[in-house]
Image (cartoon, rainbow, N blue to C red; front, top):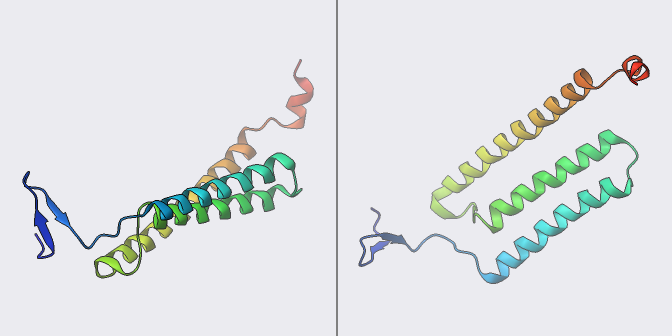
Length: 126
């Protein structure tokens, strides 16, 4: 156990160096999350962007930004605490984010390509 921790009556160690959010920071995070959800929803429902590829890339960008907002405002990961280990966790998260988002797009593209009915099949359907 580190020197900056104290033990309560139940024997649990509490560390005082962790950043905890304030009500204001949670409300900012919540507001940004709502906005970062509403904008892509509006983009898809209104059809503002005609190109589907550009729409998908825009939505993925909003998803990435929203994950960063969650990491900062709700998980309280920053570059100052724990001697940079949270920064390493953030870098790892960005790598996992890239793999997950690109893999999801790849899977959806191949499912659409390989499982969508062809025009010939559509003509033969009753």
